[in-house]
Length: 337
Ligand code: AHG
Ligand code: MN
Ligand code: MN
Image (cartoon, rainbow, N blue to C red; front, side, top):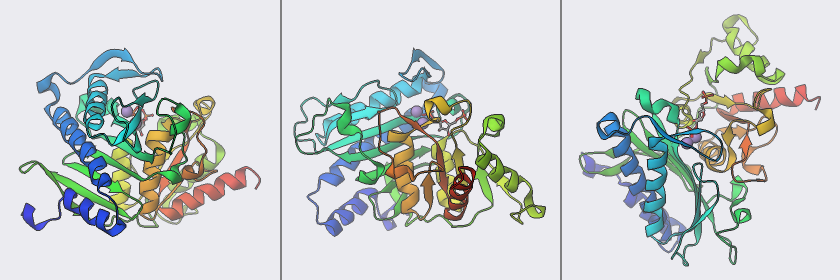
């Protein structure tokens, strides 16, 4: 019964009261919720709406854009420009930062990956959207990239939408993590996963093993030990998963534990890794830490990194605390620390 559950709007109002805020946070999220509902609709329509396949263009990172990458980016930008909450935005799909015209009162910045895991679109596997909300410092300019280059610890809120077998929105405002499922009959997100917590221990890991020949020694050591199972140093059998959609992997980890790795390796090292700091690694690190997990490059806590550029890539290791700590220890050992 939908009326027996807390709606996302009511949840936000409660949070607002708890924090003694002015109501702007509910406004910030309302725009994002509309955008995610619209993207969910387009993803769900798939081939019926002619939404599959390539757009015929490349983004700033030299990646081929899918039609839905472009559409999701347009939806995110349009929906979040109207409420006047955001002074500026940055997206995986936009080379430069974007100042919102006519939003002089906007006190926040929105950084997002409009469609994550887009290699999965054409094969009907889960994709998602990731967002990070930062404060716009007084007097800072929304056309200046430096304004957006804030550390992960400065995030006001972060979340993702998962367009999977059901559509979900998972959110943190720095007070734990809560998950809401879209009830398509009434068009509302309802609280279904209160206070999500990641178990500290796990028997499941996720890494793209096709890259194993490029791995650094600490990553290789960790995976080898997992693969050795009961007979190996870990003394237990591990399970492996790889969806190739970070949103889906993080969601699985929030639901049942696990560790996710997209490390820097010999092939991607020059670029810094694969995943982008500002709109993939930082928001996911915030969510995972708020759920009791860990998030590190292997050498530094992700949210402590000082960003150097908007589309900066970083190594990502996140999930169950014990496993992340072990990986950090293996990196330190390999570095002779
Ligand atoms: P995006 O679709 O936004 O470019 O991100 C894809 C990312 C991430 O979601 C996923 O974990 C990873 O790239 C998949 O990489 P592989 O293709 O190496 O599996
Ligand atoms: Mn992505
Ligand atoms: Mn993307």
